[in-house]
Image (cartoon, rainbow, N blue to C red; front, top):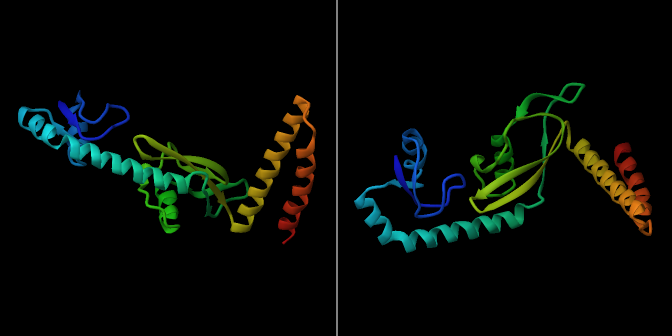
Length: 196
C-alpha cells in the first residue's frame, strides 16, 4: 500500500515522502495514528494544501521534545522493587513502569517513547534511551534497587568507580595524579552512607 507520510518516521522517510508499506502496518498503525494518508489524487492535493501547516506542527513538536530532552538528559530515576538474594527481581521493570515514574516526576512522556528492548529483571543501574521525537533522543539513568538508601549507595559506588577509572587512565597517560586523591576522598563518604 502506498502512503504519504505526515511526519518523519525513522524507518520509512521524511514528511511528504510517498512510501510503500505493508497493508497491515498502514491500517493498524500509520493511518489510525494520523502519521500517514493513503496515496491517491485527493489525498495528494490535500497534503500539498496543508504542507506548510504540517511542517510547522512538526517543527513545534520537535522543539517541545527538545525542551523535554534538555530537562530529561542525564536524569537519574530510582525504582524500588523487591528482589531475591541474587539480585533477581520478583517481576520486572518495563517501559510502562519507567514512563509512569517519569510522569510522576513531572515529565511529559509516553511509554511508547521509552526504548526498552527487554524488561529489566535484575537490580542495578541501567541507561535507558527515550525517543521523544524522530529527531530527538535522550538517555535516562534508571537505578533499580531494594530501597532508596541502597540506590544512593550504588550511585556513590558507581561514581567512585568512574573516578577511579579516570584516575588510572590519567596515570597511564602520564597525568598529574590529582584525580586519584579525589577518589580517596569520595570513598569514605560512600562508607559513611552505608553506615547510616
